Length: 607
Image (cartoon, rainbow, N blue to C red; front, side, top):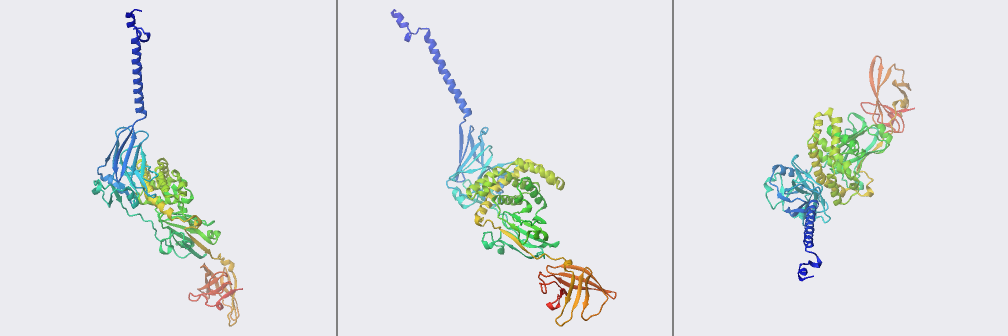
């Protein structure tokens, strides 16, 4: 090889023609690598979008709003009378609220939703209720969303799928205020004047709490004559902690009397003197002639009966087996039913389970706050639908306050609109289409109606009803005395009264001074049959009437003699019953000027 040949040779023996091809290969490989990396970056951006987070100091804490793939902004909402009014009307009890925020996203919200987290310096107390809520412009109401509290009780979180005006509402205790640490502004009627105070972003709304007490029921007349004793008790002697009827604080207020239209029918009236109701238990074989709420609007009563059946809440919550919160309940019994049951408790009012407390308190508040008509009907159905949508077994066994509060939030978020709508369809057709076409028509406007009653019920469950449940759990009796009813009515039966036919026969008067007079009692009346010193007097007798008065028959015996008639009044008293004379024997005596015989010597005694 010549020197020229050696200088023109490529490295490692390559020929001049092969070197450019190798450089081009390196270029293509480098370009391919760049393209792969670019495609990968695009794919990562598409399938694994970057998390965006916006933060804002809010009401003494720090709000963090995050979502994948879209930038977010948080701004304080400008004053709106509509929004402020809705804040002030969340529930009819007291609560706290922050300044509303307007949260927006630059692009579509991802399927994973947007996470709202609010962190505070202190720890929320176990009994604190708290929820994120958004403003629904269509119904002008704040609607709670499912909200959780972290284990350290410092962070409140909700994952939502839409953005609008958002706020936080909490229970109003001082421990909650101390934990949040924000400045508090008390709101009486108008929030507008304090809306723009940037530092005072924690508003306290104070409402007069709805009445949770009942009036003492009034019964008509005395108990029927077939009872020798009837009394009511609130079990205060075993100290169940349910109040004392002597000061009107008993949980169930009771009275016993007779039906105003028939004094032979036993009447029991009860009133639930709490913000929740009590189940009713009748003695075995004591079948009531009638039972149910008294003084309740017929429309509400019919919806309660329908809803109890439709949602399969069973006999423990049917209107004829439950005394609703602050409402009056009446049960009546005929003598035979009471005798079938025997002397003893005839009706008891038992300790309610937690689910019964929730349902009855929810019903009371919803009926109080909703507009009469279709809105109230839908509200009642919404409350009763919780039987299907909430896991009441967990509530009934829980004694942990924070767990109870968390359960209430989950229950509120589980409302089943389809189930409520189905019930509205059925009740509109079966109950109101003929009886009240206006309500039936109102129930057809389901979209707005469902959203309204659902929003109201959610807020009530989280705040008002939750507090009732907490109070109930704290006050409820211990298991070792839970077999005792809260209150009950007990009767002692008088001996079963005889028929007047069983008392037919002869009766003789034998005065201490001697002599005798014998009379015959039968269907023809009372007539003299023998006498030690009298002659025959032509007369006709007729048994005009015989009225039982608990111990004796008051008899009117009409006598016709020598063409004229007059009435004799007699008292027929069987043995074994209290009454004038010797109660160990059947006896018959004349009534003079309204008074029965005054001594045993004045009676005719059965032969």
